[in-house]
Length: 97
Image (cartoon, rainbow, N blue to C red; front, side, top):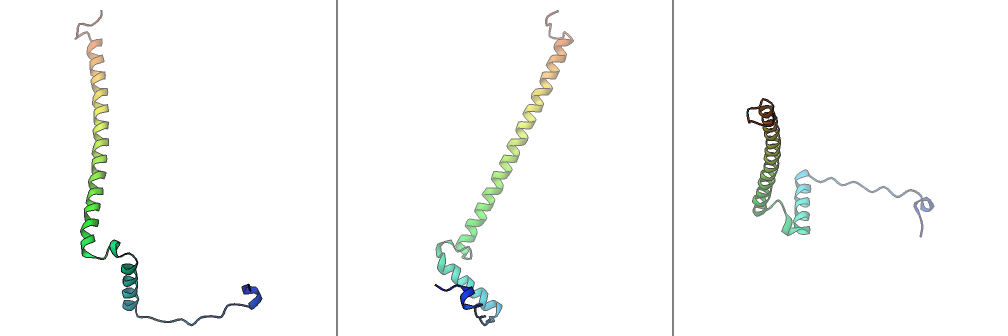
């Protein structure tokens, strides 16, 4: 087996130009042939992708709301504990004297 060093540099290949639209069409055909069931270019899959994005947005919103609710509950609990402690300290509950 000969290596590049033994045979010299590889011969340079000629470049070919192709109009941009033809190139894009060729890529699209290759993608559809390779993965016909997963082609995001087809109209029936665009609604699925939109639904998945909406679901992800709803999930992120639910996580944010749950986090804020937990923070509000902790702060409310702390305020109530401080208020209860203050009322006991002022002997308004008739606590130990």
